[in-house]
Image (cartoon, rainbow over all chains, first blue to last red):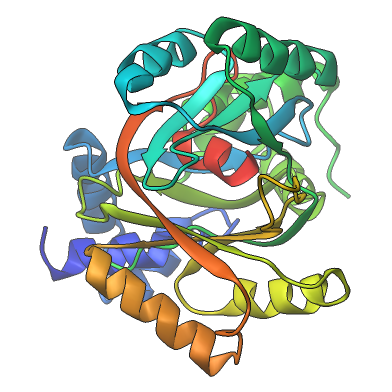
Length: 147
Length: 171
């Protein structure tokens, strides 16, 4: 990655303008050429530095039910419980965190009913109480990683 | 006046976009060709979806771990209910805070009602950044904890397979 790659990544994190020839505008801002910018973007996707480029549809507005939940898993059982959870298709993310509540996961379900059923399924499977923390208010969403 | 897309064309367009935006100089012409429409119709539809909040931007998903953003901290705070909106809006605007949500308390096990995600390259740097931020915002006195992730076990959706940062943003 060189300077142009970095500037391109930072610029595109703010979004591509919705115009017929968006790369012309981006290239101008970056003092480059549309074809050069497109080549770079192509390579960054190929190399796996970027995993996707395009509009990100809001999954919640398209329907579905989501929550962040946690378990306090005894150390000796940690890996086994992680495997139990990761086998469930509803578990979208699962992170180990340094805390008494040491397993944090996101559930993505089609409906609220499926979400509730999944939470009780996890309690039955693991024998552990789930800390269910659904979002109540959004103050900010804007993943930005300056590179 | 540009004719709106038909329901079928809208669905087709959504499907095309799941693969991402075509990497060509005129991406909307390319999409229009695929769904049998004019580029102005496609652009109008995209603008409408954006205005409706169906997507925020035509942007990218970074492989943030590959780029070295491996320090991932969840800052949780116990904010008095009457202040949570004000504090949430303030912290949400603070540099480095990628996500900021209110979530329920679960007493007695869990007292924290405000969640912020902060990513960085090194743990010390992230910790220092957060401490500085809380001091600047005069929030250091609020009960809070920093939960660093040590391992990501799973980072993909199942049947709902939006890009990872999206599920993250919505959990």
